[in-house]
Length: 204
Picture: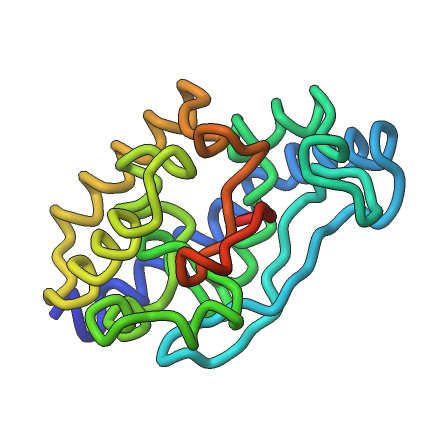
């Protein structure tokens, strides 16, 4: 019952409630981004949703605009914003719309679809999530093979309320501790691609 109906219903109810309760925080973060980084306030990028369907993901911007490397565009304010997870708050809108879930594999850029193995592509069976196995394991500090395997494992089994609650709790603990903001040796996370084609870039 939870897998077929309950998960989506719980997502919609909690997203609507959180959007209402956290409205003052949304305004505060938006003003902080505007004051420290200017406009635009939101970072938007096409991402792969359930079954690979594209949607335009929103998050509060944490980097200065431009083509410079991430390390040069990411200020102390941006690092703190990313560490707190507050930059992800606009994704509650995607949860309410049904493009995302509160718990699931993180939504990744469309360009990554061509590089997934059949096993890794299993992550596309479910809606991507704000919290989930990759976040709970350590966010960007977790290497791509492990992150994608965690997503595939989550998606290959029926959704269970207990598992989602446990993943949400562990994910929130990681966020509260400010863990996993970046991969070792990177300002954020290297792009996922075959080893001979990888280069640094924002994971989001």
